[in-house]
Image (cartoon, rainbow, N blue to C red; front, top):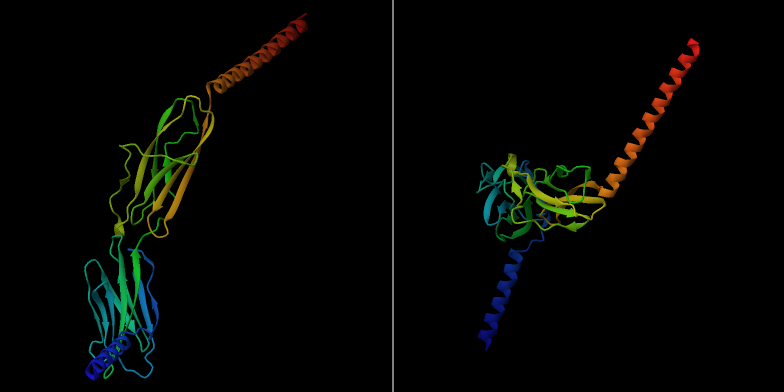
Length: 283
């Protein structure tokens, strides 16, 4: 019975020791950007407090791969490890912090970045903290709608194009008419441009706009470009198309004709009056 109790106590003490080794209480702050632009380097920093312990090393990991190591007792003290799709540009370390600069991959990925701080013996304590970073390039401008006239007639049909700004990942395109989402036809796919620096692409989608035969007033057409991140980034563009019914067009033509007829009548009256004056003066 005593042997069983003693074995249980040993397991309990071992568990406490393991918790002490993996404690992360000595890492005070971990700074990892939530989003990183693939065209610019990202800075990650780890701030820690050693108290009376001596620092053995600071290591950075991307997921399970080591990318950076600082060991003050070795020469050189800093070593860089490039892994697939990530270039480590360098880093700087002090007694209570370590910073690393990386160039994110030109693909929309989400990865875990871990800072690991270990002490010298005899305790050999290890502290870790992890944060995630997503590679994203935000669009700098609103989308552009091409092909929209100012005026249309009932029964007419046109094709509009909406093109987003460059982004990573490419933006999704949605069309709305009078705030009603338009379901794409089978051939209306979102197309992508060739990749630019950092893997950024434009996207565009065509809309077939049919004006109902009985329509009048105006149509509000809106294009949305949506960057699928958390939370989503939405930019839009709007156009207003006026619908002239046949009755309105007939009135417009009739009023225009009346104005022209009236102008001609006045001009003829002036000419006739002038002729009469000349005839009177010649007498």
